[in-house]
Length: 255
Image (cartoon, rainbow, N blue to C red; front, top):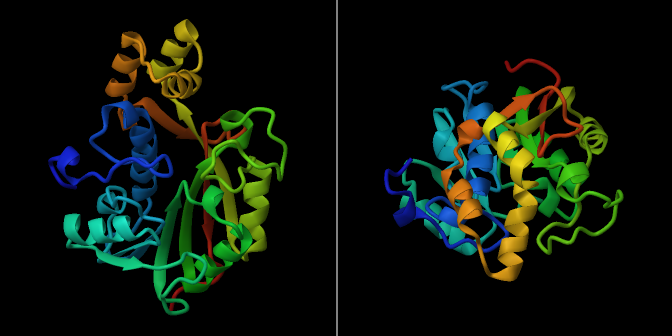
């Protein structure tokens, strides 16, 4: 990963986060924690795809003899080529991945599913490119905590989200796409963030209110700018999680 995050970062658009932006540090660290967690289970000799790679900081953390970053955004794809020349960057629509059937060992797709118009079709395409025995690591915001009160199928208030999901929906989508050994875990706030929220209330709600008002108080800004990936934990309880983490495997064994 480049030493100077600020120099390599794309401008934040609201659709994705990027490193080097103090007021985005909470969201960046939350993404980073998921990438670091997924990386632990990947083979350094594997062919890895990051579907919806964005700025590229995440796939740059992943092991693999060949790492392929796929994103549809023109600016993100051009940035990937410049900032991470050791990666293979491809601009493509995620609905039709430009990869051969069964050619990939693992697909990581983090905070992408909620942006997809046809999530089941997307997951089917991911399954197609994965070899037998290949692995999926997916994250998406937990609708139950990210948008409390939003019912299944309702349009989220976030203009960049097509749909948000609960744990049972994610499990069903991944299983219906043909994956086996599906697990749905949760990424949660760790002790330091929980302690802050006990005193000040929801950290996410406070940030949303600050952005809407165009004003950040010093307590909030200091906290947000200090958040790191170590402030998040992944465990087996998805119901109250900030983000859902789905792990799955394609049936069979690679020849």
